[in-house]
Length: 78
Image (cartoon, rainbow, N blue to C red; front, side, top):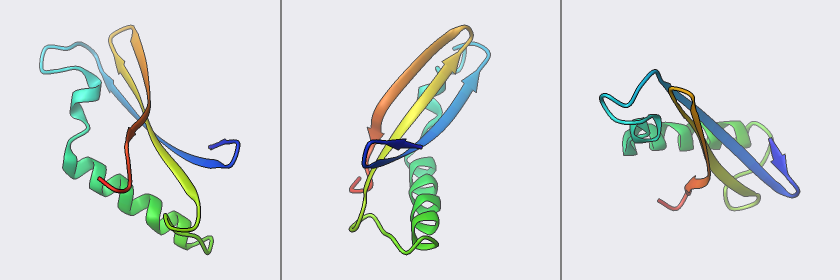
């Protein structure tokens, strides 16, 4: 997805309820690293990298009927 000149990678997480934490809490550091790797591969396939294009990592966290859009939830720099 693009937001003007920024590539936006969106992770969608769903939890039926918050009994074991809400959907946003399920984005662990390990999951972030996997998403960053996937984005880096996707960019490389297009001749780009985190150094050459602006990127943002958003999370759409759905817990029950609640939707939370978390723009810039984490960055490629950690």
